[in-house]
Structures are given as structure tokens and as C-alpha cells.
Length: 338
Ligand SMILES: [Zn+2]
Image (cartoon, rainbow, N blue to C red; front, side, top):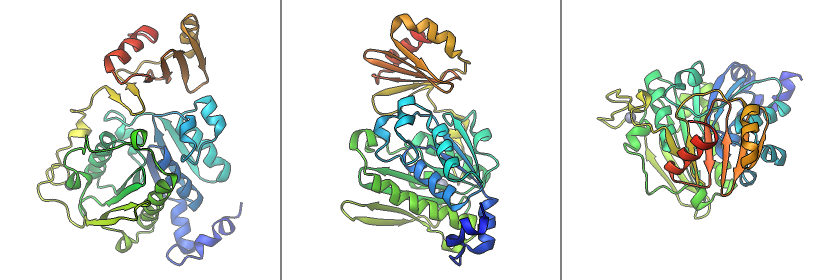
């Protein structure tokens, strides 16, 4: 497809122009988390012609995602496809001229270097502070810009972090705001909330890629699309004494506080204690007498009332039907292996 024709409407926008469009084609961006916000970010950046996108997501597509996660369709949910894989397929269908690299993986201190290196900026499509603090540690350590974005119910918030220049995530939230934080699984979410915050975050990414630094927003911005409440808090300067960007004490990067079993919302527990290659055919044969089992090349699903186990090729599992980590661990040991 003709490059100038495809992007003609964006090239007409003077701050981008023909040269800017070529810069976008040469740009490399990583998106961590590809649920609702990540889908919107990836879709917008891919259509805008960012030449290389790396998409990292630990989850699989479910019917309840389709209301807002715009890169997925009913067949992805029926197959329980990993979101990173489904997203890459969909993007390549509307823009085959960019490179999309997908990783169906949980971002951890062990793989963060491999998964987030060699890109210019990092975008937050995650749904949890644990991963955001890891991104923040990595970005501050490398001096790499990243954009925080979050959406729950009708409320959304975003912040552009320029290490060494603006406040970082830990300047604003020294501790995870645990306890007071609602999630999409408890409070629900409007798809319009997601698209609003993804549009703002994505535009900030374009400004960064265009080197239009004077146009970047140096605030923590929040907006409630239902109540119309709008607020901005300046993030123009780091907070003095910040453990992360002030003292360069990267506890999340060191993985000191990271549990191997994590609750991941919606009545489920993720187990990622050890890397163990799984032979899906072998496990399927073993599980057939115990319940319903099905797999494709990316994921194996096993149902035994009231539980549902989703197993990935590297041994990681998401166990649905419990929030009790001991129960999850015991199910894993019984059906997958210890
Ligand atoms: Zn800081």
C-alpha cells in the first residue's frame, strides 16, 4: 500500500508531516498489558503507523472482555486465545506493514530486561500496581519515558513519566494504593472511559516520538466521564526523597517483594512459581478422566467444577473459581504437577 496515501490525513496535520510520519515508521514502542486500555493503545498506534509494537499480556480472551477490548472478537473468546496473540493477528489484518511482536507472558523482574529493552517508550495497559511499579523501576533506571494509564468504572487517570525530569509513579504513589482501589471486576467499567484515557495517553506517545517535548502534559490527569469531574495535579518535578527516582533503590526490579502466586482479580489466582515446559498432549491425556479438557497451540483449558484451570506452555497457570492461594496451589499440584 502506498505509504503517503495510507497516512495522508495524518501527514496533513502539521506537527506530524511527512518527516514525522517516517519517524513514526522507524519508532519502537512496548505496550504492557493488552486488555481494554492496551487494546485501544495498540490499535491507535498501529493505525497511526508506529513501525514496531511489542505487546506483552499474561491473560486470555473471555466473553466478558468483548464489551470494551476492541482488538478481540467472539472467536478469540471461544478459543480462549492469549490476548497478545489475538491482538497481533487483528492488528496485522488492518496494518500488515508494521511489525507486531507478541509475548503471552507475565512481566516479571526476571524477564523485564528482555521484554522492555530496545524500545523508545513504554505504555501501561496493565490493571495492577505491582506491574506498574516494575515498569516504573525499569524506566527510571534506563531513563526511558513511560505513560501510566488506568481506568475503572467511569473514572480514568494518566500521567507521562519523563525520568530525570518529571515525577515518577513512586513520587505520586509511594505505596500501592491497595484497599482503596476498585477494579473492573468489582466496580465495572464503561468502554468510553477506556477510549478517553487511551486517546490521551496515545497522543502523549506520539508527541514523545515526534520529540515535541514542550507539548507533553506534566500533570497527573483524572477525568470522570459520568460525573464530568476533572482534576490535574502537577508532576512537573520529582518528589524530593523519592525512593525510586531520587535514591535509585529499585526494589521492584530486584523482585524482593514479589509473590510467586498472585490474585489476579475476577475470582482467580495466577501461579507462576517455576518455569516448566508443558507438553499439552501429555497433560490432556492425563486430565481426560478428571474433567473436560481442551487445548490449542497457545493454551490448555481444564474444567472441573467449580474450577477452571488455564495452562500456558511455560507452566504458568490461571486458576479460576477461588481466591485462596492454598487451594490454587493444591489444584495445580494435583492436575499439573508439583
Ligand atoms: Zn520518583
